[in-house]
Each structure stands twice: as C-alpha cells, then as structure tokens.
Length: 259
Image (cartoon, rainbow, N blue to C red; front, side, top):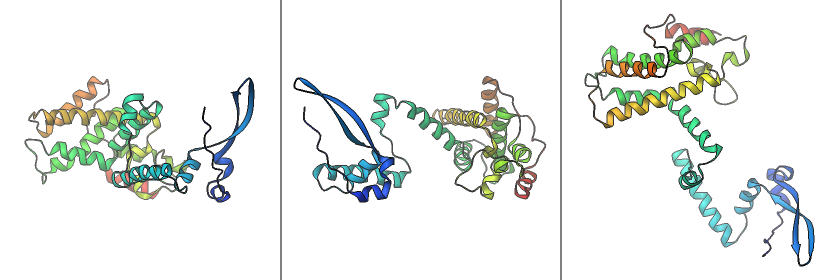
C-alpha cells in the first residue's frame, strides 16, 4: 500500500481558519509485516483542504482550482450549484430532502409565486391585465392557500400574529440578523415550521398542476383557475375559503408597522 504524500500546512493557514476547527488527530492501526503499528495521523477537514488547494503549486492543485472556480462561477451566475449525477446515483441522502424543501420554500416566496401566478393567469382566455379581476386574482389565490393551512387569510395572519411584546414580533421566518419592515408585511413569515411546510407543499402542487394544464393547452378562464384550486384543496381535505376575510390588507400592514 502506498503512503499518502503529506504536506504539513504552514502556520498562516491556521491563523486564517483556526487549527482546532480544522485539524484532529486519529489513531490508525496498520499491519507492517508481522506486526501491528499504531500511529496518530493528522486529519484535516474540508476548509483546510480547500485552503491548501488554492495555495499549493502542483498539477493536482491546478486541476482542483479549475474545478472549484467553475463551480464558483456557476454559483455566482445561477445562484446554485448542483451535482446532478451524484444525486441520481446516490439519491443525495438527507441532502436531497433538504434541497426539495428549500425549492418549495423559494417557490412559495411572494415574488416568485406572484411571477408564476401571473404567467399562469396570462394563459386565461379572458385575461385582461387592466381589469380589476386581474389585480384581485393573486390575492384570491394566496388567501385560499393560507386559509387551507391555518384558517386565516394573509391579512388576518399578519394582523393577529404581529405582536411587539413577543420575541421577534411574533415572526418565525426572516432573512439576516435584523428584521426589516418589509419582512413584517409578509404573511408567511409569521407561520410556524409545520404551517410553512404545508403552505410550501400546497403552492408546489398547485403550480405543477397549472403547468400541466398549460402544457396540455387546455383553455382556462380566470374563474376556472380558482375553481381548480378549490377542487385541489377539497381533494386534499382542506377547508376552502369562500369569502374575502375580516381584515383588510391595509389594516394588517398598519398594525405590523405600528407595532
């Protein structure tokens, strides 16, 4: 068996990323001739490997830098990097479920969801971007999905859960260390983990259904899309919202900002 070539890292590596966080000794037992030899070998984690890979001058290190730079470029351009073949062959383990959950959460974000709903709605035979019905379409779809999850409209969930006396103003989801005003105005940020998971799944399934309808070139009116959502929610055993709710959107935002 060939021994691995070992290059001890320079001290400045440890200054950058910390020796204790990257380095650990493991006792290794190996057979050498007729005797067993025990040695403590140094093992380094991925942070150290990457750091060394960008500093060492060798053909292997050069290939590593080319590979790593390609992945970094893809991440900067696309905002994601995915090893498709590795997921296909090994299933991705627990990371695959994490990936699916994150995609569902992205699809249910208001900006992404609104854009997808507009794309779907634009295929309606009676679509008119200037009509009041068009402006209300997103609100109706969003409220029906929220109601199916927790029995409140988007405005009601903000109005009832925004509370300055509670930690993080009653919010469970936000980006960054500080809650911004814009985040306090998003209904899904007040949902529990279980509620958010259910909402994400409902959004994903509805969008998948809508895309199938569009691919099949089935003529749909604006009301047809709403009726299909009702049918889907009933099939899922969820309550169907049949009113506009008791709290207006403006009232909910005023309370969230005031608190």
